[in-house]
Length: 273
Image (tube, rainbow, N blue to C red; front, side, top):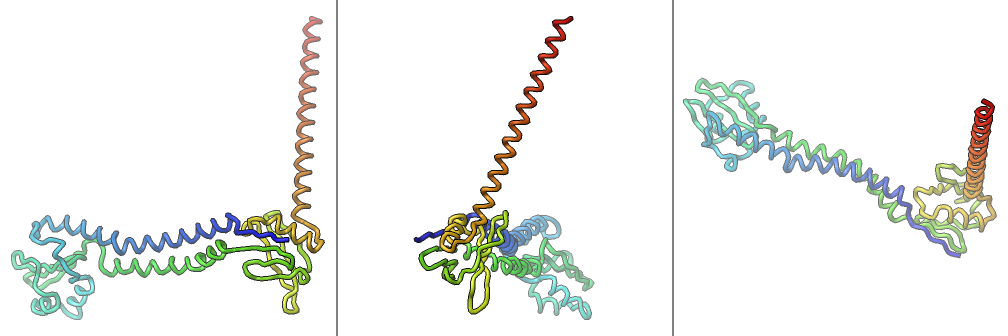
């Protein structure tokens, strides 16, 4: 006797769904870091570079990584930097307009006035905000790992019944070691109790994981002369449904007879009139 079952669709699809959800969230953050946020920055920068004071004289494609918010913070603390210190840190300005200098990057611009006052204007996202998307992606990717493993287990599950016993996901349980098959739940699982290393252990057989669940249970029951609780429940449920259907038919028939008697009485009453 040999009976082999692969994985059921339910558990496989459930693990696949959870895996896709977390990988999708991670991919969303990576996409924002690679494309979404930089694209938003470029669109905002190109819009502002068309207006004053730039008037299209500075092209976004020629901009570098500096300055950024941290660069501006360094210029402002502990005291405002001099014009020479600014140029030493950031290089020459991208634009000079009426004595004001503008240091422009892919993340924003610093305006240094003739009086030495500095101000920072971001385009849309700072470099830190863009890089943070990659760190945020680590969380859902990490959460996806156990579901990837469960998906792999669900996809590769094999259950075999042979002359010697049961092999479940590579674990062999010999027929002589099986002590009972009980505690069936109408939700679709039953527990196989067996002896292992001098102790009693339990393996849960689940119809959401094992495709040929009913057949596997029946084969174990046949080999060990266990009571088949799965079959007993199915027969009990079938009898109950048959009894309910019969009762419904009888009620419908009685209702039809009652309606016929009422119609007959009404006809008799009309004749008397």
